[in-house]
Image 1 (tube, rainbow, N blue to C red):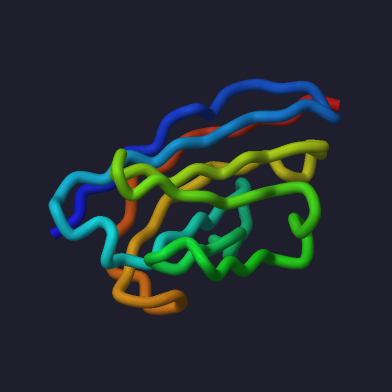
Image 2 (cartoon, rainbow, N blue to C red; image 1 turned 90 degrees about the horizontal axis):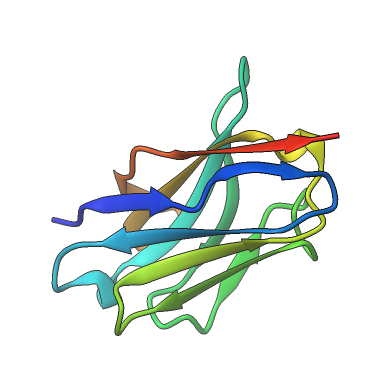
Length: 118
């Protein structure tokens, strides 16, 4: 089992930056692919970014490519989402997820709110 806890959300001005963290419990963190999704009010949850268990492979949604960077530190059981050049449309609850491979997500965190003001 993997328990995920997100942190780092908050209120930021458009054009600003935020780093989200997701701390994972369990000794098998390094064997999981990790990802970030987001859900804006009135919208469905959408994929943002994912990273392989080794960190050698990443994938991004078109809407965030070039602005967001996903990374992980297996020694700290933590995955990060560095968010730059934020836009009001990035406002959402951001969720951390884990799975045996990218696209097969089985564990979810509770989410952290990111609000981007214009």
